[in-house]
Length: 263
Image (cartoon, rainbow, N blue to C red; front, top):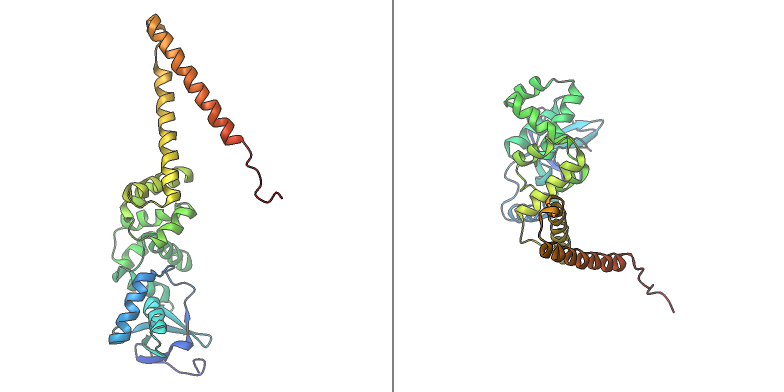
């Protein structure tokens, strides 16, 4: 049906949901489950209050803006959805601007969408800044988020609570490992009470690592030659106790556990 239908630009239609395809260039890559359930409940009660935007290509219909409304309408059991047809080669721009105006994208999704538009249309950053009504500095800083390591980007798509400014500061680091470390430290600091059992174990291990690092630093700066005879003796005893503790821990860490599959 969609292949034979003739649509008029900027006109409103009630499009069968079965005919709509997700746009492969859709900026939004993650749909929050809780927000989707809330929107579904709203649609069940009130219907779809704001039309989506769609385009046609090779007989197929693609959602340009309104992916979440489309998904919620399907969950609500609707068969059609109000949709406005756009006939524009710059549909990716329209999708990005619509999402930005609605503040629907995470910082990482925004950065990826900007980068895709620059590559697809051979834009300069100045062109993109003018199109979005943003300063060149903001565009440059946002695009820098594409340098973040994959594990950070993937986590950010699912957690929109991480502010863009914090991610920009992390992206300024030169090494990917430094970015990852800074990100996970920042996130742990944001959610100090949100710990699973595994997280608690990891936290205890990290605390031990920190103590060891501090102890190593203090030992290196200690001027042993300036200690009194009694202080030297106590220092030697403490080092021997530490040595035994380290040896016992190493032995436990390297000991192979017996297989549970043995008869």
